[in-house]
Image (cartoon, rainbow, N blue to C red; front, side, top):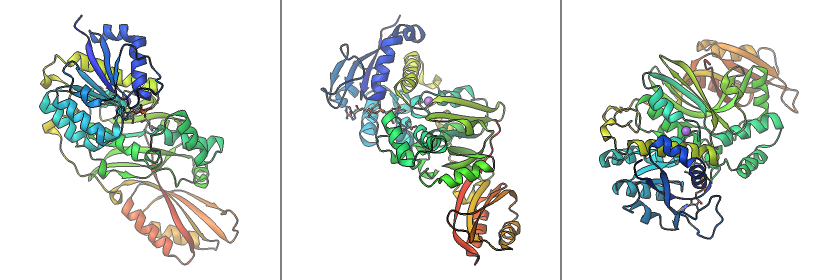
Amino acid sequence: MMDAVKVGVLGLGTVGAGVVNLLARNGDEIARRAGREIRVTRAAVRNLEAPRECATADIDLGTDCHSIVTDPEIDVVLELIGGETEAYDLVMAAIANGKHVVTANKHLIALHGNEIFAAADAAGVVVSFEAAVAGGIPIIKAIRESLAANRIEWVAGIINGTGNFILSQMNFEDVSFDEALADAQARGFAEADPTFDVEGIDAAHKLAIIGSIAFGIPLSFDKIVTDGIRRISADDIEYAAELGYRVKHLGIAQRQPEGVSMRVHPTLVSERALLANVEGEKNAIMVYGDAVGATAYYGAGAGAGPTASSVVADMIDTARMMSVDPAGRVPHLAFQPDQITAEPVLGSEDFVCGHYFRVQVADQTGVMAEVTRILAERAIGIEAILQKDPPRDDEDARIIIVTKTAKEATLMDALSHIVALPTTRDGVVHYRVAEFED
Ligand SMILES: NC(=O)c1ccc[n+]([C@@H]2O[C@H](COP(=O)([O-])OP(=O)(O)OC[C@H]3O[C@@H](n4cnc5c(N)ncnc54)[C@H](O)[C@@H]3O)[C@@H](O)[C@H]2O)c1
Ligand SMILES: N[C@@H](CCO)C(=O)O
Ligand code: NA
């Protein structure tokens, strides 16, 4: 066997400790797969006295990340400190020093990946990031390699475990949003700053990576339409259920007639669809390729073991292709770097999908006819209608409508006219609807 691959780890928290433990447990078998031992020789931590979830007796432990990324003895750097600025400086320094890098940091890759991969290509090193999207689910490898023969039409998934956990708790356990979030934090799924989970930012980081490797476009985090789960009400979850839908928080990257749409938002999904039935902190992603059709990937999107599973798989890949001519390696963003082309990324006004909306109106004859006339004038078809009494008010009625596919700008124009009717009492609640072929 060849010499051991020497690994320096930055950050020994949940994922870092998970990696050390996994290598300790399965190291022999991993070496049989990789063709050489993968050995963590150094690690940098913030506080040497803090308790660790892994054994460190065989690791040279220090507090200076920079001395690891510049150490001539280190072959591969694992960036597991998280965050944006410091991680960026360390990863760029590691690349400049000829190190291969493995990271679980979606924030870093989504915002700085274009620059990081260009630097890595120029230096002849590899930066791997399977753990950054959907933790233990091998979705990067699936899209980048296994589906490489396809023109990918769309990818849709539950890619934030915390958000899905909160929605499931609200749905089945009848707990409040804040209780469910506190539970997710206690269980260790939530980001250090949980607004990243709740506002959809974490999912948008992951979707930027998915969209890029699916369509061969640059990472475009700033163009993703992003909406979180805070505004989802128990009433709408109930009305949606009556109409045969579940409200899920999805990331969707889709080819549309005028470009690609990339969006993260609460979405009504048919209760029969696979994605509607993914509960708790689990992640699931569907990828539709023109040759293969719809494919689905399900599993743990977070946690020490699942995330370490992807980090170590990337280390095995790295160990195998360290000796391979860089031109023969799998490109970072799935397409050859000179073949990545910027396609128009659509704004929400250009999205074409079904829509759910709820509006409160005076409970009088003719009001429903007015609302449906406004939709018909714009050729917006109706899929389903529900009328409900609002809580604590018997003079009003709530109208809930699910439309057929319509351009969002057209729907918004209709809603502005509906809001302007003298019989409309209250603002409009609006969600997008998706139908996925399983
Ligand atoms: N935990 C998960 O389930 C999960 C899943 C997928 C991806 N990730 C990503 O993996 C990365 C690590 O996440 P985590 O959950 O292990 O976080 P964590 O907070 O448990 O661990 C990070 C560790 O890095 C240390 N650290 C921070 N700055 C440092 C520095 N300058 N020098 C030395 N040590 C430093 C912290 O003290 C901490 O122990 C993040 O990018 C995260 O988004 C985590
Ligand atoms: N906070 C993230 C962790 C995994 O990326 C989630 O809940 O999915
Ligand atoms: Na993954």
